[in-house]
Length: 143
Image (cartoon, rainbow, N blue to C red):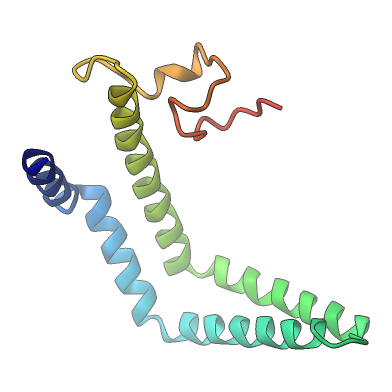
């Protein structure tokens, strides 16, 4: 097990050198430094708290709930229009895709596939419907 841990730590170090990771960290730092975005994030949290507080009341005011919902949607739209947030979301998606691909390889290896040739993206072509091999990340609806 010590060798597996060593290799995993080496993989972690390589991930931290990857361009996608570096872009993600830069985007996260830009978000953290964006004062206007921070204010919007704080505002949306207050709206959520107000909504939850009102919704928890025995006789919740539906008008207030609707107003909080509309205000939330407006602030959320502002947040998502922020260029730093858009960059962060794109960088986060790239990291998520990379990690899903890497964990997909590991899952295939655990299921007996050849570590040198297995390809987690190949399952899309011949998806069996059994999501145990891909972890359910194939975006197929098997219901």
